[in-house]
Image (cartoon, rainbow, N blue to C red; front, side, top):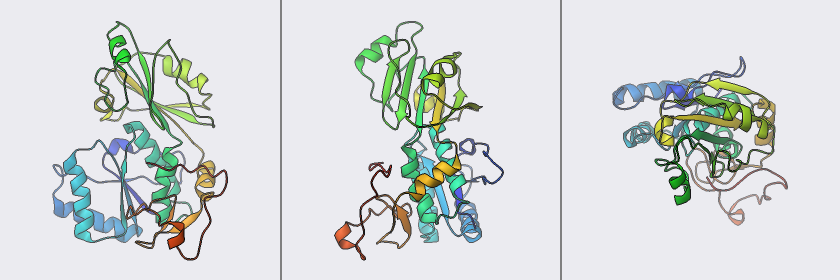
Length: 292
């Protein structure tokens, strides 16, 4: 029985890459669904799937985030994971699709949930912007602010896995050192830079276009933008990556996890001396990063 993946917005559900990838459930905002209906929907999801992993952007309204926590606490369910993602909207959608792919593999719900932190390090999420004056998600130097007033200036920005900002024609964005595909969502900006310059520089293995998520203009501070995300497209590679990380059992809720934090109760992994039996460290060369 696959673990259910749930999202807070329908535009975070990208088309599946194959016939096996399930869709995601939608967790409505409080202004569009009363609490009793939200509780009933979640109860059905848990009963049908065993576990629910709800992914939501850090940028959603506070009332929507509170609703998610209210539903989980009223149901008193330790089978609902709430994962807050500090990624741009297109990056969130990519990660959601990867977890949808993992949900039908032979991983436990706890491993799928904690894999979100691991996989986010392999998503290069950014945008081409015509202005950075309202960009508050990425550190922007005063120099960049001043240059954004030059007519015709455009900026390449990467928000994840680490912040980068260049003025187009005055520097390059550092891309992934592994094989990726590029997902592109166009806002109100006409430019071939992403397809003609960025994609070859990053040696992507293909480009796919998709609709721009509704929250992207707000996230990037302008509707005049093109959002992009480079990602691991092959489920066999993703599967291998997740499989290569040592599995632990959460000392707080007892669920299986990878990495240093439980995806369900958010408890950090106990120090090695407090665990029984004693376990080793992550295997050498294991591509797991600490931090969010």
